[in-house]
Length: 138
Image (tube, rainbow, N blue to C red):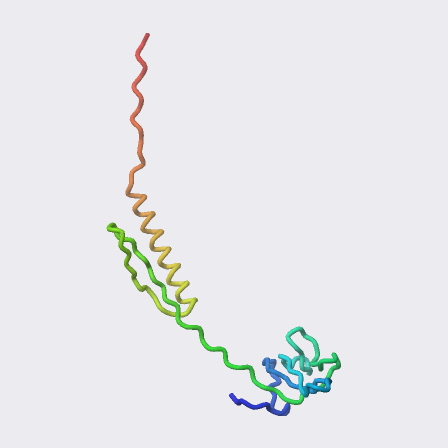
């Protein structure tokens, strides 16, 4: 990526957002800057408006600058904290990856735990109270 303003002849016309610079129309400020992309044969802002100077007059942009690269998010870490009978806590690192990978791993873990709970519940027999004794005859 270049760190200098580029002339409009090299601007991308594929709908990519870039920073456009043009005459500000104001005496003390030389340039105005807006986030725009080329759509339907025109430069348009995020709001769909034409590129305008500070006075609101439609102007042709003079220069463009590419949008900076967005850094990748740091990897996420799925940690299971397990309480011990003695009151201590231990951590088990289960998965490291993107948000989507961690979400998928977490859903699998929840499904596994749900299946374990269902299995344990199936093993427990429901309590049935003893039948009441018949009332003595009068």
